[in-house]
Length: 375
Ligand code: ZN
Ligand code: ZN
Image 1 (cartoon, rainbow, N blue to C red):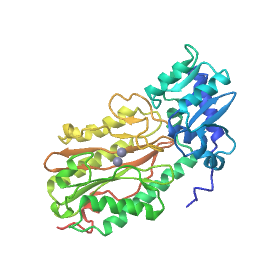
Image 2: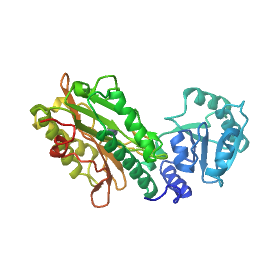
Image 3: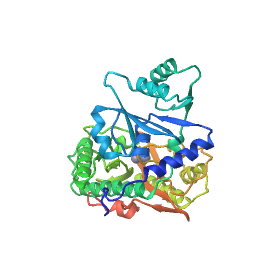
Image 4: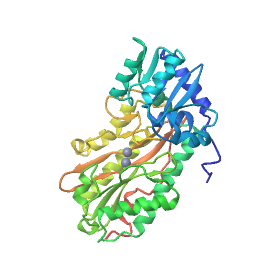
């Protein structure tokens, strides 16, 4: 497996793509305040730093805590170090005034209202404009380096899952399982969990986002686990149901329905197909089986540096899929009092269709015959 140090993303190329996007939007420059966007465009992984980009100049506004790190992570970038006593938005305003930069477009999703008010106060009248989603749009399509990082994150998550399942026992609590998974990810080489691990035993699996508690595996026949790994920067996101006791026909029925829905949706993934259509394909299978009202969330989402990025496979998302998008497909059926089944895999949209990046077994027979199941 390639070492993450071997290949460095071409940040200049990413910024070139951003300029193209900004030109299309008739946006002359951008104050990037989202830390993930700053990382994406520069390689800098610290916090409390803004990036200003325009076709004439690009500079990072940071403070002395990050001086050395910036030297290592993005040595070619112009750096503006603010005094520790000066709020970052004031340092940005000062820089804009000195360089006579106006108007300034500011990322609206991550700039706080207080920062915006301060900037408007310090800048000439009508010199501040908001801009939304330009870098997020670039991040929708993953390049080869990002894809390799996501594949590592998937590998760490999968290996940790296999190791955790091998040691499962009936006295283990949901929290124990979550802890084991997270430690396992670190042992495999990952940075930690991609998000708060969900472990739901039996009826608690009916809560799509339940927090692990003291319920023990032995208290029901199955457990739902939704987890992911963070490699260095990039994430993965998977869900599996593990049989831990006696299998019921009801569980088998909902499991088979969810799996059929997931496989049908994945099979339809290719460039040009509407995101809403992929969601509808899964929903149709679940509807037909009589569980339509029990599939209470969207089918999937894009992820990468963040666990939920801009794309949604859901009703009303009338946008076509494009090559190099990476998304989850995760239909679910939740029956209060009984439990729930969700199956989640990570999918890459390719030129000719798709590639399923995750590979943990999910056929009913494989799940049914897991070592912990009793007949
Ligand atoms: Zn998930
Ligand atoms: Zn997910």
